[in-house]
Length: 324
Ligand SMILES: NC(=O)c1ccc[n+]([C@@H]2O[C@H](COP(=O)([O-])OP(=O)(O)OC[C@H]3O[C@@H](n4cnc5c(N)ncnc54)[C@H](O)[C@@H]3O)[C@@H](O)[C@H]2O)c1
Image (cartoon, rainbow, N blue to C red; front, side, top):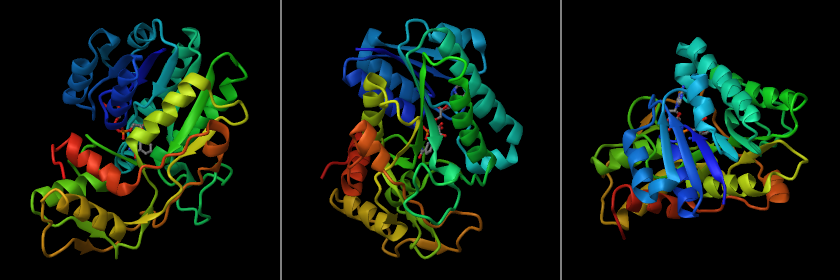
């Protein structure tokens, strides 16, 4: 058993990862400033684990707080970030402060504290709209937003900082479209699955941009948590320091809508009879995205495989109490 620090523990991925690790008997320390995360997410973790969960409220930009949070920690999972692509254009300096300076703060402090493994969230956004699918880790990055630049810079810093200290293993995970319970459905920046589920439950028509033909690689958050747990305990094999985390499967938005409607129908919820509301494709949005999971399979030996119907079912049950 290890002691884990999760930055961004009040967020969607952080709280699901925390719950997974606590269920496995690990000790988890959370750090979050609640800029997008919620107190409810932290309260759920605290309620489930008692003394094996501790929480520090504050920013990753506060060196004293970061140092305090790292006491006794074996593995850091650095998830805290300014996560919105749109906001990264509106507020480049803030995005850079949290995503680049914040990364360096946590990375440097972890190194000093003698942490063994430092696992951090990169993103499939580093690939931009490269049409060479599936996207492999070797595919040249082509960031199209300040957010994507910040994630790529994290990878580059992690690589060169190994020259300073090779005792801490830093591993970057390029998450594809992660979904699961407690993902925020509010606001213009919300991801598509929580937005559509919320709309259907309110009897409103979900908005689909384009004709529904755009595709994404949707990965269930519980699968991501298992990948992180495995790397935290066993490392990543030493050959590579960056991995895609997705399913390798492309799902069109039309198929996604059908899966949501099917999962709701199985639980007695009828979607709006008029179907989704189609709006014009938004300029700049990536049309097709799918990751190669071969490196993950080969080096880590675990590949996300929860199918969409099961994953959506888990959201409806855990978050909304809707059972078939
Ligand atoms: N959800 C996805 O599909 C996806 C895809 C690619 C990458 N990622 C990355 O995964 C990570 C987690 O994303 P998420 O979807 O859970 O988003 P989220 O917004 O739910 O979680 C981010 C958390 O970081 C916290 N945070 C932000 N700034 C902070 C600061 N200065 N100090 C302390 N805490 C701070 C927020 O309050 C929030 O709880 C992010 O790094 C994101 O870029 C997510």
